[in-house]
Amino acid sequence: MNVMITGAAGGLGRAFANECGSRGYNLFLTDINEDGLLRIKRGLERQFDITVATKACDLTNAESVDEMLDIIDKHGIRFDMLLNVAGLDFEGGFTERERENLVKIVMLNNAATLRITHAILERRRPGKPFTIVFVSSLASMFPMPLKATYAASKRFLLDFATSLRQELKDEDVKVLTLCPGGMVTTKETMNSIKAQGFWGDATTNPLEAVARNTIDRALAGYSIYVPGVLNRVLSVFGKIVPRSWIAAVIYWRWKEARNRALHLNEQRT
Amino acid sequence: MKTIVITGASSGIGQETALVLTKQGFNVLGVARSEANFNRAKERILSENPNAKITFFVADLMQQREVVRVAGEINQYLNEKCNGELYALINNAGCVRSWYMTTEEGYEQQFALNHLAGFLLTYKLLPALVKANGRVIMTGSQSHKGIKVRWDDVMLSRGYNPLTAYKQSKLCNMLFAKGLNDRYANKGIRAYVVDPGLVKTDIGNKDTGSLVSFIWSLRKKHGVSPAVPAKTYAYLCGQEVAPEGLYYYLCKEKKYSKQVTKENADRLFELSERLCDIRYGEVK
Image (cartoon, rainbow over all chains, first blue to last red; front, side, top):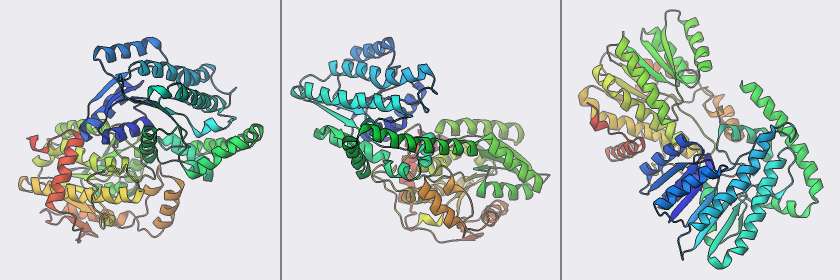
């Protein structure tokens, strides 16, 4: 089994890589952070008897992706699975954020994800089943003031994946969208979850379990995975409560959380 | 003058031990995570002991590249100022995590800092330790009892529990100390584990979630001052002839888990060497 993981040097990417490693899958890892890629490669090779290839790549840059594809083609690598993990967010309201940072969210989360997905689908192992995972978010279920661009970019992935799944059904391609709540991958995410108080803790998903269950479910042909019972309940609310109401509640909650986060950060420095 | 390296020296047990050791006349090299932290610690140590010989190095020992870098700086210091001799290494830095989080290599963080960092740092400083017939001391815990190493999933990625991860990392401290003694006692090195008891420190409040932090805040109220365990480190460093025991509490030998066997120690040694990509046997 050959698996491509994007965003592999980050917290969730590393968790996926470890999970795949423990299953004996061979890995092709990419990330914009070259140093981080080499370190996770080293860690994986020391733990598991697998082949790990890496190539640093800026997925938002077509030339950079072409360079990577050249290497893949030169070695004749063909894939059985693609885990689209690379993505980003910047904190703050729409008008408070840097314009180009807002554009970057969509460029990476959406445009770049389409680019790599298209490219790797062309490099499927012929005549074999193929599996794609899109890392969306619980945020894809709701309009989210103060996280508007991010949530909308994740909604894009959810809708796109659902359609793609239908298109490729007859070609033995399975498509799963992962919609997790918060996951503790860095100190920053830990503080942001702490700042949300009870709801932060309650919607947080354990990273290692999400990684394992996602791959299990993707292989079993599930279309969507919302980890955690509470998150599943919330996602149902997202479907039945009027969206403008949801937006109002979320705005109120995030504003509070943001104030607390600012306060926490001030205390830390 | 004898030199001692102590990690996690800017707060808690490490800071107190550093202070006591300077009072005993040792030259202390502390490792801390940030300059701000060590400045605060240094100020306090110098205010209580104006003659203290204390030098700090900055490193985030969770990451292996940082361990390797700081080991290089310490070795350079030892070669220039201490005739390449290190009298003792105290692997004290440790952490608690509420969630499964990984290092750059993808290793679980409690295992990486509480065990692997000390394993790798000891290896890097081994020549200086051998030269001085040095001692290696780990900060362990009573909680190493009642648990086995999960050999099939040492990073605990199947069902992570913060306490299990902590207990296992402390059992690893015991196994590492035993493994060191098995290999290097004949070369003059002795390794120990100190059980500090329940101590009033902030270990459970640093980078942990609300629940772990809350439980620790309640629990630490019953803890003793870090000055209490500091005496045990001072005792182990202060004896002319290296004590023969492995596990010490309040300056006395204490019984430890039956899991601390040669077989388990060898197995951990082999695994840790692989995870750090080093071979102890190759050190001359």
